Amino acid sequence: MKPSLKRALGVLLIVLSLLMFSLAVCQIMPIVLIDIPCLGSDDSDYPPGTTQDTRIGYCISYYPLKAIRGGEIYASGSTNQDEITVDQLVFRREDETLYVNGHPINSGEVYKTTDWRLSANPWLIITTRFEIRNDGITPIDSLAAVQMLFVSGDAVESWLPNPLGLIILGGGLWLFVRGRKERNLISNNLAEAG
Image 1 (cartoon, helix red, strand yellow):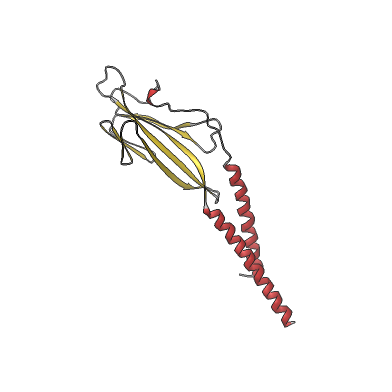
Image 2: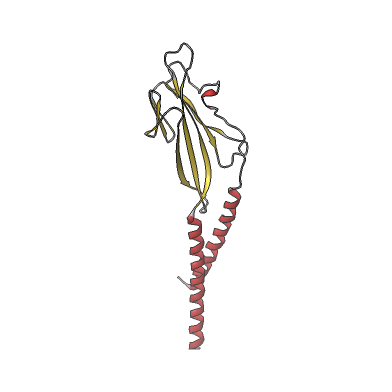
């Protein structure tokens, strides 16, 4: 690769990296979340599809990255089976114990896990932190023989720094310096020859 091409590529990588860094700073501005879409088993509204045969009812609040108006519903529903898959979460009921992705959670306990994924910006990684609560057995009706295990929780998205942005910036600086040194070396050789 010619010295001038290395230098030009280095400048391009530096400029793009710094531009993406400034966009990343704008993206991570703090946002206040004001509402709570799922209130848990104390809420008078049961999840959609709840009947007297319901075994598991769930409602998970969702707080996206740019949720200026507040949270939303990530998932809400019910099943008359002892197991259900909700996106990447698998809920299984055994009596009053809830298993989330194979991890047992007794009534009143919380299961926490985090999902990671790359964003379009090389300086940032998107995380989704799940906090799933076993709210215990909730009677559907005072006459119902079967009682529902209610699952509530939150799915909160946030940003984390990605080292890829720093690597791109470092690569651009290395190409710029390397191209400049090679250009100076060629200039010195031509001056000595002439």
